[in-house]
Image (cartoon, rainbow, N blue to C red; front, side, top):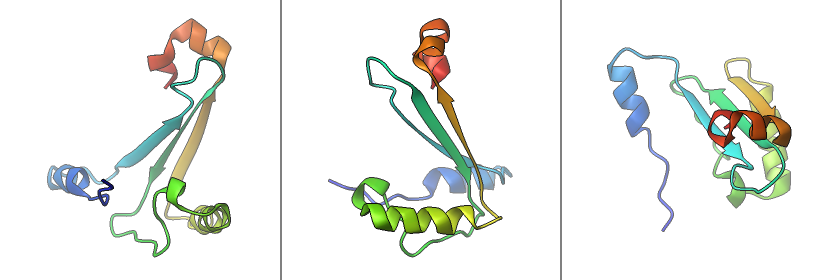
Length: 97
C-alpha cells in the first residue's frame, strides 16, 4: 500500500529549532558492481510543487519538466555525489553511500 509522504520528521526537527533539513536518496547500493549515486536536497519550509510526486510514478517527460522547474528555483539547494566501484571496494558500501 502506498502511503502519502508526510512531514512528521521535519515538524519534529523544526520544533527543536532546526531549520535546514536535507532529504537524501541513493541508487545503486544493492548492485553487485557499479557506482553508487546519492543526492541531497534542501527545500524551503513551505515549498510545494503541484506535479512533484515519487519519480517512479511519473512519466519521463514529466520528470524532466519538474527537474527543470526545480533547478531553476534558487531557493532550493541540491547536490549529487557519485562513488565508483573501486572506491566502494576501498571504503566499503556504507561509507560510499
